[in-house]
Structure formats: C-alpha cells, structure tokens
Length: 297
Image 1 (cartoon, rainbow, N blue to C red):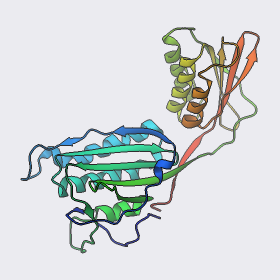
Image 2 (image 1 turned 180 degrees about the vertical axis):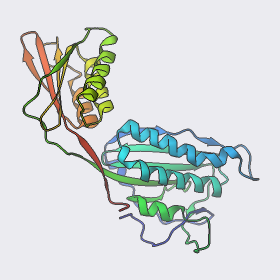
Image 3 (image 1 turned 90 degrees about the vertical axis):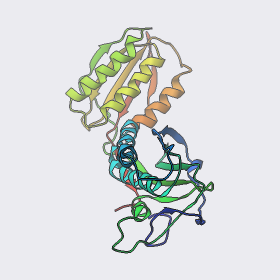
Image 4 (image 1 turned 45 degrees about the vertical axis):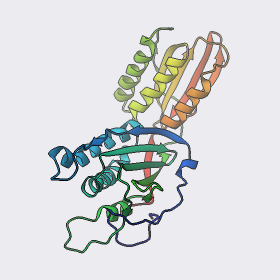
C-alpha cells in the first residue's frame, strides 16, 4: 500500500503547498546512486519541442538500463511507468529550465527523484474528471509506488518501490564435476579472463541465475587477490559453486570488500580456507528472485 491516502490524485505544479511525510529511506544502507541525463530548456513558454516530448520515453529507457545494471529486472515495468509519469508531469506542468532524474538503490528499496530545478512552485494533488486527458500522473504513481511525496524544497517529487531478494534454491552441499581455468597472476588479463570464463561456463552449463552479476562479482575477487585458478560447477540443487585459488597466505585487506560484493551482488558468502600453496575461497551462488513488496498488485 502507498503512503498517500486520497483515492484519486494527479499532479500539477502550482503556487500551493503540499502535505509532506517523513523520509525514512535514508536510514537504510545506500547501495548506489545514478543521475540520469538531464533535460535543459533554455527557452521559456511556447510549444513543446520534439526533444521535450521525447524526454519521458528516453528516461524510461535510461531507467531500465540502470535497473538491469543493479540486477532488478523484475522491477522494470513499475519503475519505467513511474519515471515516465513523473517526468511527463514535470515537462508539461513546470517552467523549470532543467529537469533532472536521480535513481537511488537502497537495501530493499529503489527511490526515484524528479527535480524540476529552478521552478519554485510545489506540486499539488488534484482529481481529474473522467473526461480529462491529463492529470492522472500521481494517481498512477500512487498505485505502483510503495510511497511517494514532495521533498521540503518543493521542486522534487520522489517515489519509492520496495523489493526483497530471496533464494529460490538452497546452497549446494555436493558439487558436480568442476571445470577450471588457470588465471595469470599479477596481470590485468586475469580478471577479464575470469569474467569471460564465468559467462561461458555458467551459460553452457545452463545455470539459471544472473550470469552477468556472477561474472562481475567473481571478477572483483580476481582483481583484488592473487587468484591463480578458478573453478565452477552446478550443484544438484541449482547453485553455482565457485572455487578461487589464491597464492596469498592468510587473510587479505581486500577480504571485507570481496565479502560485501558477493553478499550484495549475488547473495552468497565466500569463505577462505588455507592450503599448502596459499588459500582457496569457496562460495555457493543461489538462484535469486526479486519480488515486489507492496505497491501494485
């Protein structure tokens, strides 16, 4: 359910106030922030240009690319719709010389902010009649978002979509045959070779998880350690088993960063075990599923 309580809402930038609510998202861990390309409008008044008319569609595409980078493909539909609605309203109903969109990734939440910069009028909610073509932007946002409102400065409208990531398969205990790739030590080619190997072998073995995220996480481990060999296997319950052999003996200052990357990107814990030649890091990458929490049904 969304935070707003009025049944029907639209949005129009006017010289009136707007009820605001506490913003508690920033108490969560911020995982990433992306500023989408901004729309600059030096001209004031007159008919909209083709560039302005196309801007909501371009922001939909840009937002989709960001979500794919974050591994949240299952949120594409809802995020694209709210971005399109908020940007459309900013283009149509403000005299702002610059309209900017920011996407913020928090633990369990995606936050979208549309900033009609230099336009000091606060958006207010309105209830369009059944025959009105426009004015339904925040009615749609209200249905899809977990919460939304107007920031204190009055020219930024934000909305949030909550999600949760769950593992559809438990970590594996027994592995099938590992396929292995030697990695050149102390070489820029090592991480790239590791990523290529993960993409090729995980795809060939039919792993149903996010292959690209797995390749990126394992590439980070190869980048930050003295990795000499990489092994992959698919367990009987669907997890991607990873073994990273490392020449370094004992712990590394990079270990906390690698652990955080594995947990955040692929939902896995990596553990290091000493060997006669260094150590080996092992992880079981589950098949993750992103689910919406609240909002649209």
